[in-house]
Amino acid sequence: MLSTAFENPQDAYAGPVKSWNRPEVPRLPGHGPAPLLWDTPSRSLLEARPLAIANLYVCGITPYDATHLGHAATYLAYDTLIRLWLDAGYDVTYVQNVTDVDDPLLERAAATGVDWRELAASQVALFRGDMQSLAIVPPDHYIGVTDTIQPIVAAVQRLLDSGTAYRLGPDVYFDSAAAAAASPWHLGQESRLDRDTMLALSAQRGGDPETAGKRDAIDPVLWRGEREGEPSWPGGELGTGRPGWHIECSVIAQDYLDIPMTVQGGGNDLVFPHHEFTAGHTAALTGHDHAEIYSHAGLVAYRGEKMSKSLGNLVLVSQLTGAGVDPRAIRLAVLAHHYRDDWEWTDLVLDEGIGRLHAWAEWAARAGQGEPLLDRLRGALVRDLNTPAALALVDAAVASGAGPAAGDLTAIHALLGIDVENH
Picture 1 (cartoon, rainbow, N blue to C red):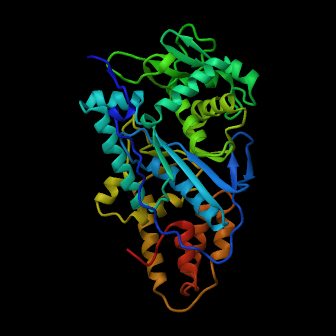
Picture 2: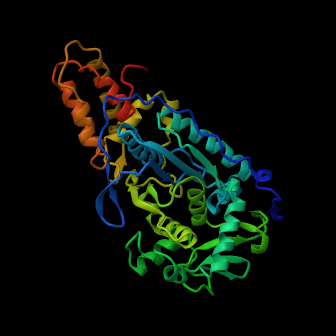
Picture 3: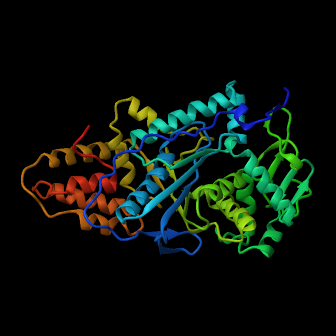
């Protein structure tokens, strides 16, 4: 099989430049407080209070097997954060990438006999539809890696020129020790893991610690030189190749957000190596920290094991909605779990979401008014996105026998993303 080299990234794949339609987020009276968010490096709650615009980057999908409930849980967590920022009166700039060229995508394409570009495009389209059905606020900038090749090439060249990267054959690697000496970052700063754990996770999560000749076994690849049968792009002095995983998010974030950004978000499985080295690349390139807060969502299991593409134990949003499940029930089923918790998806979890939606809809039509919910919902949610506590407040109002107070349904719509009245 011959190598596929592209003179222009657009020749390879048009790129997921279009996001999905933005759901209605009603304006509420007054403003809520700035949310408190758990910061992984400091192991503490920090106030996510931007100076001007709230800047958020959430790592996006590698487009195959989209969208499973683990994805949905992560993006619902940061959808809640965005809604709280909007309620607090902040403008928000939200960026999400799509890793539309990477080893797992190429492996799946080869295994299924589908062109990798077609696989990426179809899965991104499915993801967009799932996000829209779940009423998740879309990113302002939705960026494919294949649309960012030349800025990545320039960034890798700068790292080489500064001595924080080195060549190894056709590849270019990040020099962790040199970056630590030249920037505010050091290995372990974000993850706080010991070296043995880093080595193990690097091997499991896309690293190559066994590669001979690296200055440090944990050093990640920045630019992967051209391999037969793989897509590649001109890299100038770097040679023909394609980007490493972590540099893509670093460059996209720098292009679209103020650095340090307010919050870097993603699933718990991204703490190391992905967020660790994304922060390292940004610090080496800019001299600044990558983010003020590093936030991570827990993992969703199914049938006793983490929901995983490699294991194939996936529950897809599109399967549920295709079977007639109301997306609002899926949203409620996920929001019933705290975003940082690991939990398991079961039929009972879905049944509870469906039952809760039915009970809330009946309550919405009930006469009489209970105590207003707005201030109490704000108080629950701003403390580390405590959606289970917020749902419990609505459940208590439903159980009270009275109907919703004026503004309750609007508050639920704005803060929890559940439009109770409309189907």
